[in-house]
Structure formats: structure tokens, C-alpha cells
Image 1 (cartoon, rainbow, N blue to C red):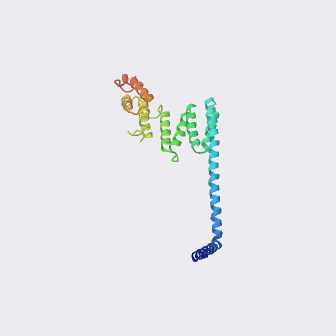
Image 2: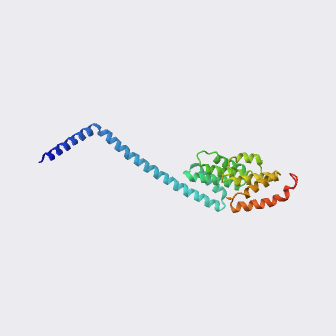
Image 3: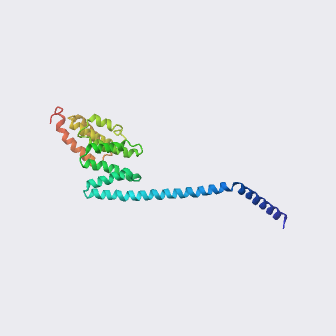
Length: 225
């Protein structure tokens, strides 16, 4: 055996001895850490499986509720959506809450529908875009009873030049202004809508028809038709 080989063997023996001492001293720590890692991985996998299972169940319930609604079984559909909204997983619960509000509106229960939309709009756990949708939908339901100023206050911030809901806000307030006889304000807002380069074809058509209705009324005294 060469001198180099001897030194290498002695060095390996020393390392084995040191490792043995470390193992003897800290073996329970190593065992505990290993068990902890295994349990953590198992927990994560179990949680992921549970999440996936809950989502699949919620999805099945949601589409069953949609089928009930499509079949005009409104009461059964509303009950199903309410059940999902209270106990479903993630996104399906949010979708169900919007469907509940829409179903209430479809049944003529406007006050309850507005309350449901307002609850969504006030829910800070939701994405801001969804909260804005709820605000706009509630405002549309209030067009026939709320004042233009009350609707403007409700929709404050959504009428900014860069906000995607600005045309809807103008349309909502214009409808309320028309109802209350303020044709000048309604005309101004509808013309603002027409100037929006990003306006959808449907919204532009509605604005054009509304302006035609307003045209003969602008010269008349407020309240005269």
C-alpha cells in the first residue's frame, strides 16, 4: 500500500468516525426532520387532492343548477345557486352569488337583487373587477327608482376617462335623468358615449336610438313630453 493510499484510508476512517459521532448525537433530530418532511409532503398532497375534489363537486353542482335554470325551474335553480354560494369551493361560489342576484332580478325581486349585488361589491376578498361588475349591475336595477345624483354617487370612480365602465355609467345616469325630465343631462351623457372610440356596437346603437328619442324633447321645457 502506498503512502498516499494509507493517508486516504485513514482520512476516510476519521470521517466515518466523525459521522458516526454526529449520528449518535443528533440521530433523533435527523429522524424528526425526516418524519416532518414526509408529513409535510403528505399534507400538501392531501390538501391539493381535497381542493381538487371540492372544485369538481362544486362544478358538478353549479352546472346542475344552470341546467335547472335553463329548464325554467327557477325556484329550484335559485335554491341550488344559494347552496353553492354558501358552501362551494372558490370561483364557483362567486359565480353562484352572481347567478343568485340575477335570478332574483329575473323574478322581479329587485330590492333583494340589489342587496345581493351590493354584498358582492362590498366583498374585499373579491377581485376589484368583479366588485365593479356588481356595482354596475346593481345600478342598472335602480335606474327606475334612484335619482341621477344617487346613481352618480354609487358609481363614483367608474366614470373616469380610462375606466372600462365609463360608457355604462353615462348610460345609467342618462336613463335616470330622462326619467326625471332632465333631458339636457341625458343628451350630454349620451353624446359623451358616442364619442367613446372603444364603445361596443351594441352600446353605440342604444346611444343612437336614445339620442333620437331625446332630440325633440331638448327644446321643450323640463317635464313636458
